[in-house]
Image (tube, rainbow, N blue to C red):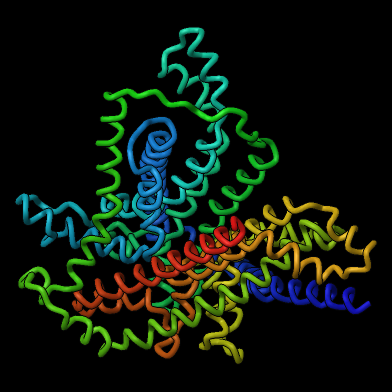
Length: 528
């Protein structure tokens, strides 16, 4: 009875969490769509221009990002280039910094006074459409790469061996076998990348110039002019591509089950192929690393771009601008969200993967549906719904917003991992008189501890880099560090803004390294 009571308590907590983290704020915001002032926004020329800019930028960036991701994933899985493990890690580096930092680093490199622009005597064409595209590719590439790489590295080699015996050329094998195998992952990656780019305002805010996108217009209208009608209308439009991406992903998940590897690839040496792949990978690696290198360099110069001599005085200047306080805010929010989120997502995963029942089905649907809500839309809905309540303007609303924004992916990690654990454990334990809670504590959690660590890292890293979900909710007392980048850049404290980006990157690298060390130490103990 005690265990049944605890399970019911967990169900109640999860139901209340989704009610206040997503259902009520979103329902309240979109209920205001009936207001004529909100509907008038759709007929304005400003809205139409921003909408066209968003669509064209997102389509272009998605095409380029997917092409680059497909090539890098193929090169890592089908060639003999060296250092594949290091390359795979490097390609995910842009995920560890805010999108604002991507835009700022492009200014350092290709702006009017950019390092590359001045070094080669070029004219800057960064600001505008192509600047947003470049930053968006940089920002979205890692996600597309991971989606394709994780699928491609488990492909079965048998069809390729049969094709080789029949004399089918390598290119026709790629077109006839690889691309059909990747069709569903490519569709899912395309929709996910498009949704990621179309809802981002960090890159367009830094390098957009006169090319205003919907998220930037939404930010300017709500934060700058307190025009909530425009914000709600744009929020509704931004929700559409995210919902389409969600539905496409669900349909692909239902129809396409990827088989386990029956035979690994034996890659023959080919100097021409491997040489070309190495050069292209080096170019892509340079594109990915250059932004990090740019703000790492600018963070320690006296005055960019006038005086590039080395100094550490920017550290003191940044701390005088309250970087330390905002860094502590970010660490507190990230740790709180990671701890609470990991517990909630793991409990939800356990109920849906192992407990079953009607509530489990409804809970699973609620968990994965949060994938369809962009952070900027969720943040605005919180602003409208919670304004005037006791949590508005506190850390609590920032923690709740991040929990709602990032809950789905860690939940799916737990759901998939717990589904692989022997399903008879609880039944055997009940027969032996061992409680379900003890089975979970002593058996299930130890078997899935690596997943728990990955869930914690996912929450932490995303909370450190996010700007969309908290831009409308933070105050000078609880502002996360990532939002300080645009403030410092607006005050022409470029070096301090670069230092802030470096601090966020270093914090996330340290967390990822700590998780990797814990997992390695744990696997070493089991090996002994």
